[in-house]
Length: 284
Figure (cartoon, rainbow, N blue to C red):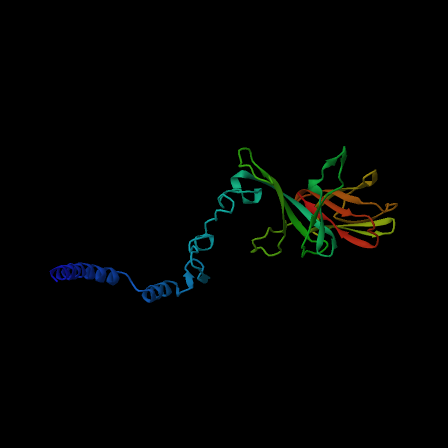
């Protein structure tokens, strides 16, 4: 009997020690329902506001809110080259770029592609100089006869390496003096050259409204030979040039004008240019 009382007493003491500790354990840890409630609260807002572009961005559990969309920084999979580093001549600072301006003219248009004649860019190919340099311009809204400014871009010594390292910019002229586009030179609508092709005959018209032309030297040539040459001492004249072959040819003029100095005019005629009127382009 005494032994049983001793055993019961030991068990009672043990319970007094264990129960308070177990009560602390369960009180310091949430139940499964409580834990689920906390998780639900943490993940209930699936859409977070992206302050950078004021749009709603969906974020999944485990996703990162900070990325290239929200910070503007490249992601790890993107190029490591900073956006500020130029990759072509069009992105270089002006001090690293040489610009040279030329006058060109749309002489042909097929669909939305313009063919532009730029006599000042004529190059020597296999020992033979081009009649004119032709530039093709896609998505072109210009019309045949429209003059354009053609700017060549080349890098200066010491410029950062870029690809491409040279380029062209084509800009239409503006007749509005307040425009940001380049303005037509003052002589452009004063001194005019046009040619009318009729079969194998071309009629050349020259008109200087200022009346200040001293002399005009005219040369008509194709890739093989000089077709015509002559000098006129008048501010207005018309002449007929015969035996013009159905091949690309160019009419060139050197004009000595008392007001504008020496002007150069040209009119490029492609093959099959019969029954067409081509206006010349002028430059100083």
